[in-house]
Amino acid sequence: MNEGWHSNGWGGGGWLAMIMMMALFWGLIAAIVIGGIRSGWWSRHDHQHNPSPSTATPSNDAERILHERFARGEIDEAEYTRRHDLLKERSR
Image (cartoon, rainbow, N blue to C red; front, side, top):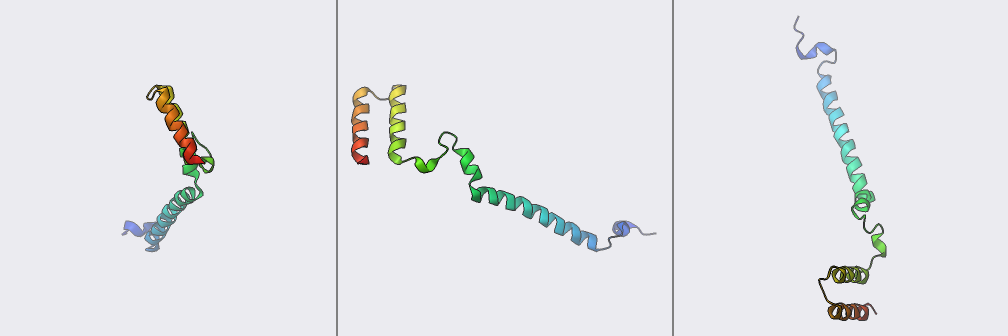
């Protein structure tokens, strides 16, 4: 007559099975996330403006920023030329 928690036929092992299934489920989720991070999946999608960061050099980035600043009018032509020449001199 006392049906309680054990009426499903699993007895006391039902709780153990549920705990193991939850551990398996969360372990699988963690493995997917860690695998994605280690494979670089997220980092490849974060760099949409530069899909191959291995080809970028600091001088290329600096030149790009300098060109952008000049295009926006943040620096004048004399400042642009001076800084561009300095970058070229450092990259040799």
